Image 1 (tube, chains in turn orange, purple):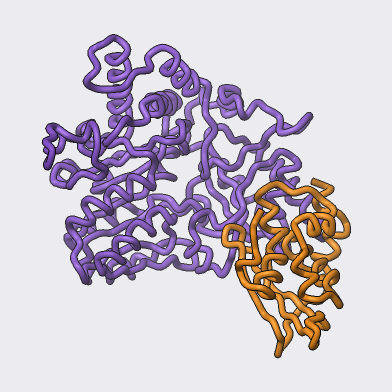
Image 2: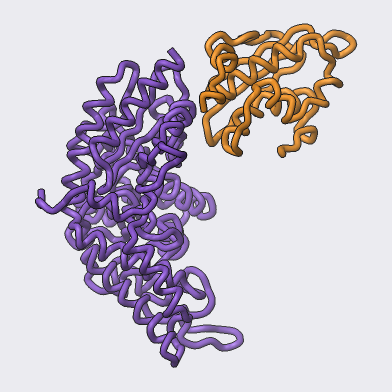
Length: 128
Length: 410
């Protein structure tokens, strides 16, 4: 458990990076995890070559959901939407550096789900 | 309180309460509102039934079938006595409280509601006493009225009386909130409902395990509860109903046992209670529910209630001392053994996860009462709940755990 609340996760939770909203944004999407009450919204601005130039997340929820969103925002800076397509569950778990059971996995994956569905539509999202 | 009531001795009868969550970390179980732990007496009854008396009930003319039938029906009598039902035929076995309420909605409800008729529900209902009526309302075109929860966490009975003037056909209300712990005044609500010609359907999932229940004294028309929250197994629950209502209601599921006679194009329904028990029932689980009732009777429901009142008052005092904790619902003497709370700056999931590391099991989420959480502007709460086997020491460990959470997130 001490592992789950690693210093880096608590740091991202308490001092989230890229927190806020972009208005206008090229891509905005929001979803929640109704069982937990986690909610994440992601706004993106992209350039002509679909490269992410600005991103922000907002919402509320547990430390895992919010920290993973903050880390994801940090990671996708300057990446193209095509590159985002390749992000997987393992990338998120690597970022967090922890292992999670099935319940908390949903918290961790919410931001990636919002990002991918926002960028590509729901068919791009396969929950594993 | 009875001198012989000792939660420290009672705990020893529950194998799960004697285990460690991991080495050196004993379980502190504070999630009874979701499901209770099971005493050895009940586990033995299940094991004994399946080991030696297992057979299908009714119609079998062999020793095991007769033993199984007797055990199944004796359990019904025990449960009937437990709630002081006038006749044991008024005790219908269901899968759980949810199925019991769905049964009423789909039989009595479907038969009695017409387009434009009204049903009264409350803001503190569990989804199991909301959704079946919402589904019925959608298909028939009924109107739904809601009794709000006031700032003290009690039902606004002035609004209730006003809503009754619109002549609803039914009132659906929980006996005890699974989040706030609020104990609702069912007898007076039933009297008012009856004065206005409404039938009252009570979700007893959180009351039957914790206090003496007398369905005649409460004067309710339907009362539903589940075995697994009262020391019994999952997969079995009960619908109690007023005899005149049950006997005129159409059947619920069709199949074996619920019929008297079947022809190729028609059937005659069986008598009560079998009319509502289609297919092979959860026989072993019914036997286990009977054993749970015997176990609780032996300890005494009054004793259990008194103990929980003491524990919840202690828990509320201690929780209130923790900076940043907010408890939802009424003061201790108006609630059962449930405390839903939040801790400033920490999501309930994180609270629960960190407590788990010390073996403390509390629940986090909306507890199947989303509208109630919406009313408090919350998405989730952490909930600690108490039963006959919880002690002050359990509460002390919870409080200690909460300080740990605060330190981590501070």
